[in-house]
Length: 394
Image 1: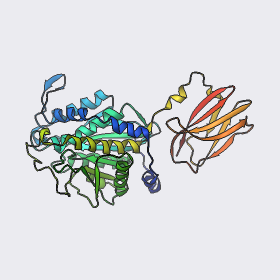
Image 2: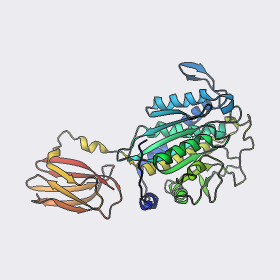
Image 3: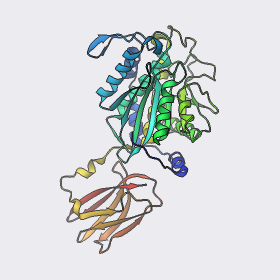
Image 4: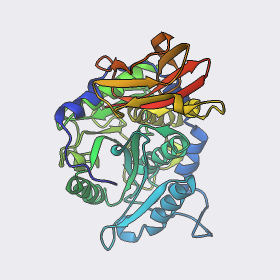
C-alpha cells in the first residue's frame, strides 16, 4: 500500500456523515452473495472436504497456529491470487503468517476500506470460529474483484488471533507507521451461530476514531436494503477480536458477530464440535450480505464507465480543468451550433443539464459546492459529435 501522511479529521468524518441513499448496484452486489460459495469455503477451511494446495490434493486438518497452520495460509493465498488480486503472504514472525490482498481504487487508490477476519483456530474444524468470517472475506473478494470501485479495498486474513491478536496487531502497527489511510475496518468473527433464530447481528463498536459512525452506517445499510439481520450495536463493545488492534492505532473499526452480549453464543466455541452441521446457514448468509453490502457501499462501485468508450466520440471537443476539483471547474467546448452539457454520476445516469444552447465563446464555470466528493462525468452532445470526460470532485 502507498502511504499518505496527512488527512484532515473533517474529511475522515465526512465519509461517514454523507447521506446514504439506495443504490441499485449495491443491492445487486448484496443479492449476488452466494450461500453455496460461502459453504464451499467453510467446508474447505474447516477440513470437511478435500482441497488442492500447491497442486496437491489434501485436507486442511486444522488451523491451529502452534500446531502449524501454514497449509491454511497457503490455501487462502492461492484462493485470493486465483481470483486475480494482488495478494501478499506476510510471514511476520517464525510462526505467524498474515494473508491479505489489495484491490486498487480508480479514483482514490491511496485510501482504503478493509474487510477482515482471523483464520487461525484452537482446535480441529472450528467452522464458526472462524472459518465463517474467513469464508465471508473470500466471498467479498470473489464478488468485488470483478467490479471497479472509487476507493481501494483490503481483504485481510489474520493469524494468531487466538493467542493475543498478534497478526492483526502487526498489520495495524505497520499500517499506522506507514501513514496508511484506512477509513474503516469491518472485522467478522463468528458469524454463523444463531441458536434462537432471531437473526441478531451484534456490532461491537467504540468511540475510537469514527467507529460509532461506522456502526451506525452498518445499521443504515441493513435498513435501506431490507436485510434479514437485526443489528444490535454494542458501545462500548468487546475488545477480544482483531478490530481492537486497529482501535489501538486510532482507526475506525467494528466487529460483526453473533450474540456474545445477547446470550446466544456458540456453546461449542473452541471445541472440535464446532462444525458446519450445527450452524445456521441462513444466518451465515445474511451476516455476509450485511458486511459485504456495507463494504461495497463505502468503496463506491463504478459501473457504467463504458460511456467513455463510444466509437464515435470526439474527445477533443471537450476539456475540463482543474481536475480533480473541489469548488469550481471550468468546462471548455470546441463546438459550433447547438450544444448540451450534462453532469452524470458514476453509473452514467444524468444528474443535471449544465448548459443547453448555442456554443459558448468562453469556458463555462460550474460550481461544485452542492455535490459530494466522488467520480462524475461531464458529457457533451452537439451536431459535431459527442465527448465525455471524467470529473473527480474532492
